[in-house]
Length: 62
Image 1 (cartoon, one colour):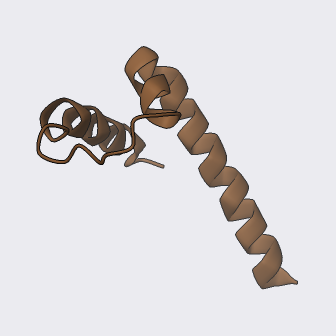
Image 2 (spheres, rainbow, N blue to C red):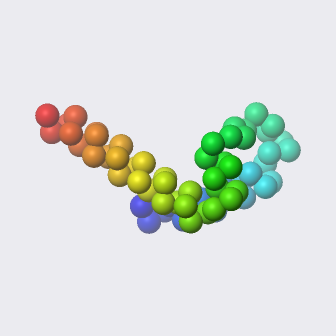
């Protein structure tokens, strides 16, 4: 969770600097939210991570 802001900034940087070199980078859904509202994108990523972690812990614990 502490790395989320760094990952988000890398996503923004990649979108701005690598798209010309790799036009197959996904250009829908999450990236649109990232472009519009970085704080909301970060909140969604953290929420999805928590949900996935909870599901994983339920599978491991039975």
